[in-house]
Image (tube, rainbow, N blue to C red):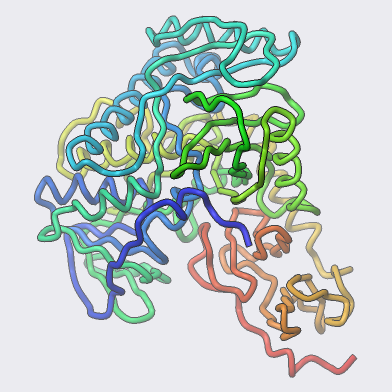
Length: 503
């Protein structure tokens, strides 16, 4: 099974499970960087808050992220400028810079042991065909008063045609930061519960959040869940992707600080270094693809390993993991009150989620305390931008429609359970129904409906992570059907293998 480098290096948490009905002014679902930072700020302002985390604090996307913080964005500032305008790109860079400053302030204030440090950010091309991208980003960064310079070599052993260097960005262990901050939250104003998955939100006079053991009643709810839980029209403007990461222990070589992004088109990667005890690691990340739409997920780890060994003296690959992100149709996140009254969202961060998560907390804290925030309108969740969104909207929603069509009744992946190898899963058609069938290492068969509980798309088996992934809106389920992440509230419906006709 895959495991995250950051989670292994972060302290454990021990928050209780919700086991009694309680009430609060504000309920937050999700204990990643968005939820915990928002809870911290709201509790500090005097709001009564309850935070519910389905697993452990920072146990999801935050703990599976890159650990990089920067004012730049993965689609490049010059793309934001061309899609929107110069003022928007400038404000994106400024707002993200303020979020990084807040992380540094909190680390220093509470002496959070998360290896935070300021480092330069690099974007480089290996061949001349990508030099134009570098030139555009140099002009954009300089225009927005970022400390930028053009360079033609890097302090890591990578071939470079041209590169941009931006000083003053940052790195940390995101899981350690979030868990450290959670311990510093004002417990008189905020109660945190782990292993308390919300499976339903009911709109009564107030909002009622149900877990398997108790309920929380709140005036307002924040969905700090990376993508909104449940069904929202906004999900047609959010596109789920996965990206992969490895941590390679090095035998020798220099270990310079920095964030290194490669612009090559065939297999974009980013790299950074990290020391854990006496060991030096290089982290290599890449392998971007739509959720649930690959035949061989394990190949991405193999490509990352090849990339690492190409440039570094690698002793071993000690960690490998992946993370999910949601691309917004118009290039900017959606932060603020949703189409449902009193339900707030923070989503569409693309691969820039650590910085945007903290920025979301800053915006939501001001909104819920009835204060103006200079960035609220920029990232307004209810905005309507058909011209800026049209190209991605049409492309991505045609892709979703294709996933529904290809999974109409017909040929399944396996005709019988015997065709499924140990520790693997396949979709099997049983009496005109599609089942998601997993055979564990002992040969025991686990059967669920293959129909995603979010919007009825057929799930796909992820061989690298032993999960069922929905190719439509990104819900992911454990091999035995429980929800891992995404918009789905409910697990895959169980099926009784004994009820299947004998083959």
